[in-house]
Image (cartoon, rainbow, N blue to C red; front, side, top):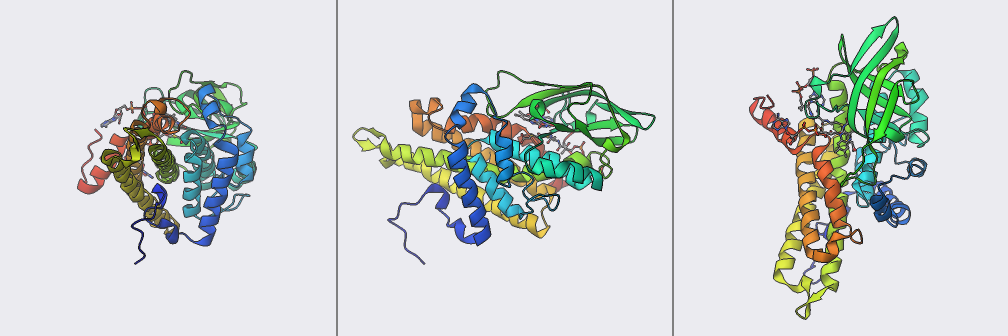
Length: 393
Ligand code: TGC
Ligand code: FAD
């Protein structure tokens, strides 16, 4: 055993998890961290305050190989899921809204085409989406159907060989900057997915204003007013709700890993503040009550890191189940949010501006707690797995 009783250790290094990663995984993580520190971190508070996502970031993220990172072929990087998860954590250490962009592009829009698309659809869309030349979004939620997407009203009817889509999608990340939307709609044959170029007549998107969360990310309402699409716009391999829910497993996995980065960043900020801020003649980090907060948070961060890594390894081994993803999403987002809020209490007054990251992270994590399945949806999913009883209805 190595003695470390007097060594000061960063919160994210408490459990020595680095040793569980191989050289390539560490290299991808470190390169992404460097990119994030150089190109994202210095500007993110300003983007958040102004409520903008700079669209030129898409190409930069593409050049870094961060879009559709764990997909194979079609000019996608084809890394392991573990490497993808580590990269998500580094982006989310800067801001959840930026990780959202990466998730929606790679794990929802591109992953849907990759998994359910025809050869022609994949070759046509994926290379330019991987490069960040084209931006995608994923429209499942509707104004009246969020947790219960089975009730969606958006309908695609056949007209000759064409499809005609009518309906409204709500809270859609990237919606008003997207070149292509993956839209899920009811048909006479159950739920189907459609690739909708956003320039198609009848498609419109309006950004949702006055957000208190995810301000460095675009969230929009999509209106499909008799959008006419050719027969080959439908994703041939997706039938029923298992189509969008299958893609959601991919994006939820990225969240499980990503929020670890947000929590780590909060804890780094609060720990260094605790050692530089003096009250009653001592650093506030020397008070037992502050140390209790830091210790409890570092323990939760370590558990979240281990859970993320365990699910990453399971995904790479092909043994990850949707229920395991629900466990990770429920635990890691809930704990990351609690860490962000507690870190803000250590920063006290200084913690309420954008100078420090924890309150920005906390505000973002309120959205992460809700999207891709709320706390209650994941509790009920786990409860259903444990009991066999469906408590959704
Ligand atoms: P249920 O009867 O359970 O299932 C219907 C069909 O779907 C299958 N299925 C799944 N397949 C793959 N993965 C999963 N996780 C699956 N869960 C269910 C199921 O086997 C069945 O297949 P089949 O072939 O028998 O028809 O459906 P339900 O109506 O009871 O609903 C289940 C429930 C509530 C868990 C589900 O609807 C749900 O997950 N609701 C939450 C909705 C949600 O997460 N929306 C997210 C929208 S996208 C988003 O938020 C992006 S944020 C992006 C960002 O900025 O990062
Ligand atoms: P509701 O479903 O109305 O839920 C309200 C409350 O009721 C919640 O607490 C919920 O847990 C609870 N509840 C619902 N049903 C039950 C039940 N059976 N038992 C117990 N409690 C229940 N969607 C997309 O399709 N694409 C996107 O790109 C996207 N991006 C998003 C970005 C942001 C910033 C946000 C905030 C949302 C985004 N969403 C997106 C939508 C998101 O997935 C939904 O907000 C989420 O699924 C919840 O739906 P809702 O807001 O309609 O809440």
